[in-house]
Length: 271
Ligand code: MLT
Image 1 (cartoon, helix red, strand yellow):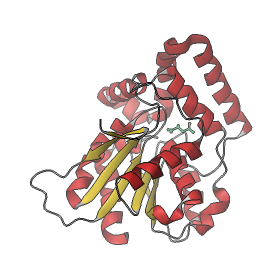
Image 2 (cartoon, protein in one colour):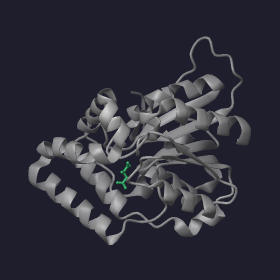
Image 3 (spheres, helix red, strand yellow):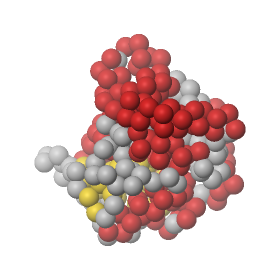
Image 4 (spheres, helix red, strand yellow):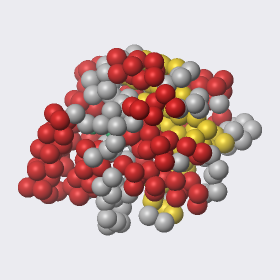
């Protein structure tokens, strides 16, 4: 994986037969506790002329032993540094779940970089007290068991990340997600947990988002329910909402065709 400064990233190139005119940059921001490779099913978006850049948040996926980040704003700062280093002036930022928290932070701190937003299976609110209690339990497990905690985290997270249909019918997707989780060190997971539980509430900024915005949610998402996405749509002026059937929280991996169709339609007609 290429790297610039502190950040590894993937760049998806168009297939040789694609001859679309250049459309700009599309930056895909990954979920917790996964890594940039969760966006592999979105490679095809490059064929429509988008320069698809996929940062891997600092410390995730083993990589070299960089100090993991412990704030969402730092993840956002890394992404902006990468975008600058690649001489990208503005981009469509597409964040799924934790990636969405990072997209909100980019909007709050550096809105000029945003040409459009795709917010998938994410929410603007900070963690609730119950959410923080759950995060603290995970941190305690990681502190107590170190690397041995990672498979336990994977077992706990899989039925939350994936919808009931995927859990029942798609063992290949379940195993793919498990392997993405197992690629992370306990330290990196703990860093991301700390970042998420200390993140700011982005709800007050929603009404000030004026770039084209698409919201996507899996119909079977239990972590960020479709009703939360409906709320978000009401608060972001002019935003659109697409509910992906038979998908849980990782809608891009569970139903890539429907996810890609929604994003492609948005990029083609709204950006
Ligand atoms: C994610 O998918 O990034 C996480 O579920 C987000 C979270 O735990 O808040």
